[in-house]
Image 1 (tube, rainbow, N blue to C red):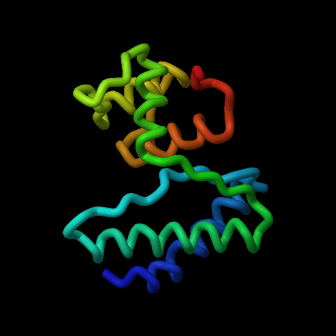
Image 2 (cartoon, helix red, strand yellow):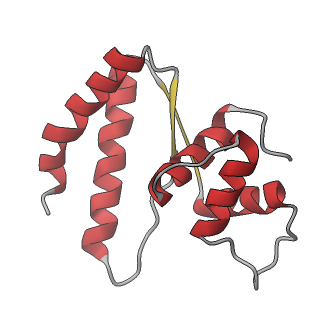
Length: 128
């Protein structure tokens, strides 16, 4: 409910991840969407992304982002589905695509989304 107060949680969490698993080479993200009619949610998503981008800058960590559309197209390529405006990959398709590439998927759809972004932005495991 207080996006900027989220800094008090997020910044230390990133520091802990970097200490525990680091040094972190890069962070990938889905570009936050603009959600029509939900300006507060949109603002919150952009504020959180800004916190992450600031942290990466301060710590010399690469930050890359991919548009939601480019990630959906990546799912189609992984699953060998034709891209079609009538077929738009759903969360279950993202999970299946991540599992197909890595042999396992995350516990939540958010983990799968983040994993897909990392695969697209930092690896060559997603077909062109």
